[in-house]
Image 1: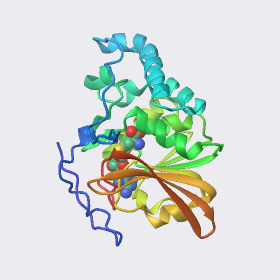
Image 2: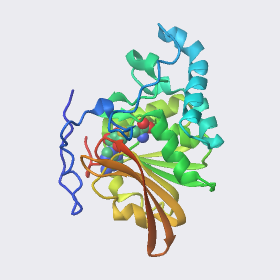
Image 3: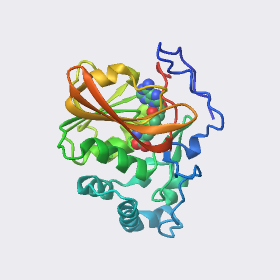
Length: 267
Ligand code: SAH
């Protein structure tokens, strides 16, 4: 596997806190259970032996995934409905497709992962709660799964990905689902946001930095919310609401483990 390039750290330290002890892409973008152990894995969804079968069984497997998310406290019907629609198995390597509906993060190449379904549901629910956002930014598109979920009920989804190979993979996956016209994908450094498109009604950051980039906080509309994993070895989801032109309120949520947020781009 190609080692991701390291890039110059921003003043805030991005790119530095990325060589973490015990970091492994395979168990990243997941929730950590309060005991500190990895969240228990649900039993494998449907017993699917071949990809051909998967097409037939995937709807049932997705239904089981949604049921599990409900049991894990996800309540927003827009999010659950969207995740029921999006074929997650189309966003992972064929060899992993039979595991696509487990509550697990899976490798997508370039040392990155597709986020655990619970993480996707939790992050989207937190920023859209009691709101109907029209324009949303996702930092860290990866293979495009979360963007596809967002595009099911949000009019304008903007995504940034810093690894060219993944940007291209996301483009290909979203095109296959005919979602490319609803998701505006950029290849670039998401720590800078998209100042020309801001303000956003919600921002989701799918990779962990030491601190949430100020540029992203500035690109939130007043009253809008941002969610991001924050921290180095110990990370938490942090939910920030912009309460005024120069005021933000933050709340720490669950302990998680995410791939690192890195400055710069990777060709
Ligand atoms: N949203 C994805 C999760 C992808 S993992 C999903 O749907 O499952 C996080 C992604 O963030 C990786 O692809 C990584 O390359 C990307 N990333 C990390 N730092 C970034 C940055 N500064 N700008 C844009 N993308 C970044």
